[in-house]
Image (tube, rainbow, N blue to C red):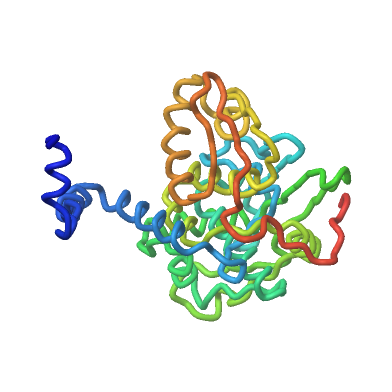
Length: 329
């Protein structure tokens, strides 16, 4: 009798051996990872197992998904960035304080991004221009998932004032129709009048979006996974990469090359050395892909990354209502 057959006959009728259990080893290995990485992995697993429905989605204007705000302080009074047919201009404004108009900087960093996502989400879900922002600055900061310590309070207040004062010019082409939206996103927001975040009454409990910004937002709101955004809020670059992929990948019909030079123009104009940009972009891309399980990208080709047709992170790529985009202004 052949050796192999003898082994088989000896095992006939016996229960198959159980597969090895590596759960304890995996638990030990996982415990050695930084807390941020563990949370990212947990979010990735949750999103893979439980797809996000449109009712649970967060939202952001399509142009702001394609072209992000500045991530670092801008010395000029105007910020300009273009990506394909989408274009963004942010013009710094002024705030009235104690009888004087004070020039504000161009808003930058993670804070104005989180504010715009929050107000866009509330506006789309509730179909209202009036967005509740809590009874104090500190309460609003906590609503956005940020620490409400003294340092964060000061930084957040500055960015909120800058965002409230700025003017946005959003340009895009939709189905061959060119649209330009030139607005202040907030109709009226007197939060800067209060110098004590604990005072109720001085901080307005409602922020009102301008009518033109609200109408265009409803027309071009992109749904995003809330849990993904929550895990990426520590990096403005990772957040920008995620929102770009969430908007772009579901529109890709065939493999599409994006050069590193184009990526640098879109995401890293502040980096003089392309190598420095790649060092920053790759980790941000890894984070974005971790919380977008259906994203398909090929990085094996030199000089480019290849975008592949992918499912959107939420069941629909766009929320459309019967309100036209607005020209000019």
